[in-house]
Length: 206
Image (cartoon, rainbow, N blue to C red; front, side, top):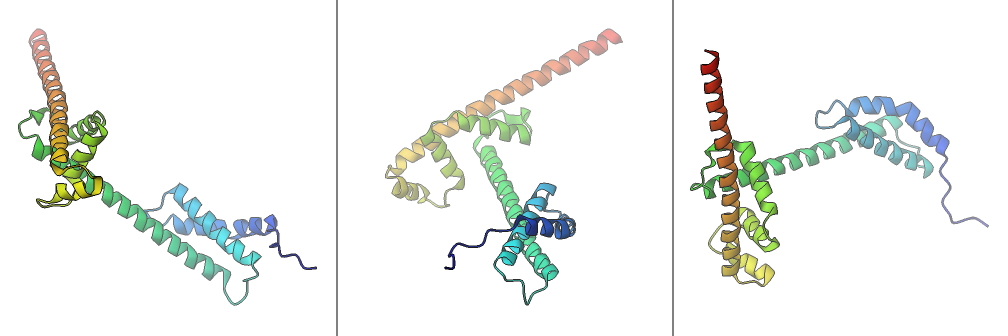
């Protein structure tokens, strides 16, 4: 009677595949600047495993092992690079959008004491202090669709009236502006103290 269970993979085959192809494939994968050392190892391991499974399935004829491995590696590296670049661009767009929105909505705040990085970090810290509803409203004010009907879209999605979402956004941004104002004043006060101390030190030395 023939067993219907698939054959148990022979670990020696996989060890042989690794010893024969891992080094050249790693060197090839690391040539792409979008692939880190750790990512290259993961990609190569996946490529070798796919090749090994092909061997176990008996599909070892009519193809060149090296050609197959490098073809699969190139596909995986390209896919990884595309995902990495897309994620990086998304992070940059999110950061730029947040900074632009912060700057546009804090014109009345004394934010001159904060540089761009400090402003963004203060914004992130302030967002955490908001309620879930306020946080969602603020996020929608940044990333929601443009146009007069943006709050109506959120109303349709949530079942909560548009004017309530607008009120939550206004309340949330008021808290954010207060946090930015406080952080900015701390920075300005610290800078003034440091400047005064330096001037006094200079007079004492002179």
